[in-house]
Structures are given as C-alpha cells and as structure tokens.
Length: 243
Length: 253
Image (cartoon, rainbow over all chains, first blue to last red; front, side, top):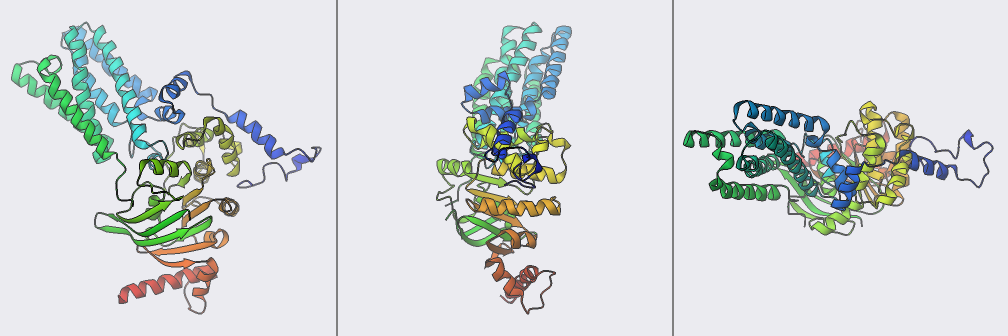
C-alpha cells in the first residue's frame, strides 16, 4: 500500500517479470540501500560514546554546532587573540565566556530547533538531547578558547582562569533560556551578567583581570553555576499531573 | 484500549483549552472534529505526551505517561504529526525521517528499511534525496506523515494531516489511514468533515474544550437529518446540527 500509487506491483513495469517476484519487495531493498545514509566519523564515534545514534544525530541539528557558527566563534576568539597580542589586555579571556553563553543558549529550544515540538515526544528525551548538546557546545568553546588563549601568550592563571567564569555564565544563559523558553533571553542574560561582573571587578580593583584570575571568585562562580544548572534541570522536567 | 482519558482538563493561564474530556478508543481510525479553537490540538498534544493535563487521568497503550519509563515506552510506539511541523531545511527527506526513527529508539539495523518503507508509503520515493527546502507544502506534509509512521506506531496521532494536500493525495491518504487503522489506533484531528466520513470508524466532535458528540460517522449524519442545519453534505449537516445544539444548550445553562 502506498500513498499515491502502488509501488510497482500494478504498473506496466511487470511486463516480462515472473509472477513469483515481488517487485515491491525488490524495490524496497534497492531503495533501502540507495537512500541509506553513511554517518561521518565524528557521528559514528559520538554514537558509540553516547550509546545512542539518535543523540549523535541530534548534535548535527544543533544551531550552535553548525559550521557557520563554529567559524564565527573562531573568528571572534581569533580577533581576541590578535587584540591580546597587540594590547596585552586578555581579550580572549573576556570574550570566551560571552561567546560560550551564546552557543549554550542557542543549543536547543522553541524558535531555534525547527522540530522542537516533535522532539518533545521522542523516546530519546528532549532533556537528554539538551544535556548532550550543551556539553558538546561547552567543550568545543572551551577548546577553541584555550587554543586562542594559549596562542595569545597570556599568563597561565589567565589562560585557564576564564574556564570557571565561562561555566557560570554559560549555566546562567542555559537556565534563563530554558525557563523563558527563549534562546535570545538566555544570550541577553548571559552577556549582561558577564558585562556586569567585569565592570564590577574593574570598579573595585581598577582592572578586569581579577574577574578571570582571582582564586577568591572560583567558589562563588561554581556555586552560581550549580544553582543555575539546578534551575535548568527543573525547567526541563516533564511536568507532573498526568495521573 | 490504547487511549483511556478520564475527565481530563488542560488550562493555559486563565484559558481552559480542554474541559473534562473522557475518551476511550482501541484500534481503528478515530476522528476528532471541531471548529478552530475547540481544543483538538491541545487534546492531541496531551495524547502525544508533549504536555500533561492540568487534571484528570491519561493512560496510553496501557501505561501511565507520568512516569519516565512508561512514557519512554509509549513514545517508542507513538507516531505524532503536529499541526505545525518544523523542518531542517538542509536535511533530505530520507535524513529527516531517519532522524526521528533514531530518536524513537528504533533498532539501528532496522532503520534504513523502515525509512524506505515510510517514504514509499507517502509516495515520496522520487524525492527521497531532495533537500527539504526544495519541497512544496504538500510534500512537506507527507514527509511529516512519513516520520510519524516510520516506527509502525501502535498509536498514531495526526493533527490536520491533509492540510496542503491536493484532492488526489487526500483520497490516497484516507486509504493509507484505513490501512494503518487495521493494526493501530489512529487519531486524526481535523476540521475537514469529508476526511472523517471517508476514513474514520468513530468520531468525536469537540466544541469549547468539551466533547459534544461521540459515535460513528453515520450517527453524526443522522443528527442532521430534518434539522435544516447548514452544510453541503449530509455529514456536514450533522456536524452543524450537533454544534448548534451544543451551543444553545451551553447558552441556556
């Protein structure tokens, strides 16, 4: 049974074909092989690591993992690296948290994922898809940031110091995006919070470097990130009340 | 019974979209009729486990979707075509259908053949490797139907499935519905009365969040006989008569 026509069984194509050959079956076998998609190496590895080809495939549909987005991220961090080399101010460390927050907020959600409504009723839960996407976006941003930061020749404390505030800002962007169901709101919240943090530190100490290099801020950053993570977890639960 | 809904309500803020619906249905094609804003889509979204009810009880395929494990099992056996299905424009037809087969946790080895079968069933074999951005609205609707049926669902929920289909495709689609309904519970939400008459064994008519009629298409047709209700076809007159009676009863109450 097909939608608009029989596949091959009732067509003139049967002329000369033995009656005991099921052409529908033959055609399906051909179509199966012709249309079969061969996943790339990265997708195969991700599928194995995640033990779910569906989750691996979900990474391909992530807005902030598309090549154009990754190139834009690399350009921003590259510009930061050049600015750092030219001025001595650690721009990479200042840019990276904001860039990552935007990527995290755009990992998932209504208006960003075209098939969001449909993905909410899949056996692979939308929360799991979100978690995997967020982790991969974060890891890629961290890797790109570390390369740019190391290439800009900043001190080790600065080179790695921004990873902690990046975690906090990204977690805030995720929490706001999931609560408001708006990626743009998440980006705005993340960027605004990071800008406020930098300005506050600068007004208190006269420079911005302590915002990424001060060991005294590590615990507050991590506590804030954990709280935001809990909010995002709660916001993405399947609401109760079905029975 | 594959769908058991008892006194279910759903509110969005002050708006009550579904108001005390009770519904039970097994295998076959079940039509959900009603005017725009009647609550059909909200009821279907609850059946699809996209949203939970505000109150009442839902059991799907003998399971309670409130628990993670049962919900996951329901979703593996579910097919859903939303009213507004989004697409990844860079995906081909086959890639799109395959993606949702994987998200439904079909065994990976079975996916390629299931994808080919689903695409052929909606007669898109000639466009299987076309990018979605190149397809017409009717073709995209058929892609949506293909992803819904790729896992041979036991419960298939279709929201306005014939929107954008030409008359020939709609006729063929009704035949597909009847075929699917022999094994599964197919719930079709529509405001096109002729789809119901041609494909459904049972029909419910919703208005203002409530079911105001439930029975066979013939019984709905009979409600319109001799009433002078508006409509070009007998089933449309039954539809109009039931709606008018429900609204006048609500106005009196």
